[in-house]
Length: 332
Ligand SMILES: NC(=O)c1ccc[n+]([C@@H]2O[C@H](COP(=O)([O-])OP(=O)(O)OC[C@H]3O[C@@H](n4cnc5c(N)ncnc54)[C@H](O)[C@@H]3O)[C@@H](O)[C@H]2O)c1
Image 1: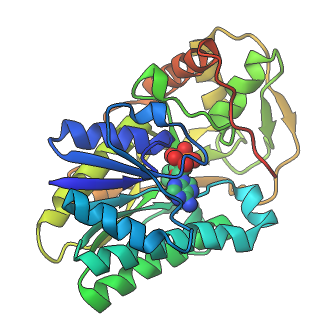
Image 2: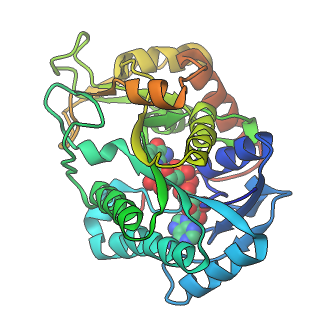
């Protein structure tokens, strides 16, 4: 059983590659290395391919055929919200066009199992903040819109030619399964805070007057190694017929920004007090999954808690600096 992992050299992808290999599957990586490095998937076959390029469908079909691929996990995408606002046409070409390539190639060679990386960004700013898969999608930026369109595309392929598909809507992903597989991008709370602490700067809290217990925003964090295991569960699910579905991948537990900063301070030993500034537009007060469907249907639940998420992120952050690797910073 050979699984093609697009975006397999990325932060999450490298963990998915490890988890699939540990589950006994053969794994082949397809990645253009635009935001990652081949060193993260050392020892696995890697095809360097830009999925948004015009020639990509034929090239990917060739990869699928030559490896006898039975399934695809499609993670390759651009993920910077600010950049997606500044360059929406490019984001749609990358994320929607890249998925179009995957579906075209899969159909051409009869590879009919796909796990698609979606995002909690599909929910936008939902009333109440606690969501299920039935909560209407209402993305508030082009990045989130590309994920909604992606979910439509995989469902349309299911109806048109019998693709079996699972869309996983990831909530806040953090931590590292190994010190050399940390998140290199300074785009989310965890890495933003670690980056500031390393430079001796105060972590920033965007608003402490939200209607939450401590006034700061509440999110749902998942350890990246647990998330990777959800992909194994999704592929197992697709072994059975008629099992296409969409799942929120969250812990079902909300953690506030202030709680997260306290945990990071404990792990890092930092005594720098956070600085509170104005709210940012587009930050819902609460965004947490019930995550009941994935527990019931896939038998998946996170095994690692907040302490392990934070400790592993901190260890990986230091390992990246020790290896002389620069963080990836937002481009817009
Ligand atoms: N990190 C998160 O918190 C988060 C949350 C929700 C959803 N996601 C989704 O998970 C997936 C993986 O995210 P990540 O955090 O690992 O990001 P990442 O940037 O580390 O990984 C993306 C990978 O895709 C590759 N890639 C990008 N464009 C490509 C193209 N046109 N052709 C081939 N390869 C391409 C990159 O080189 C990289 O290896 C993405 O689809 C992202 O939208 C991530």
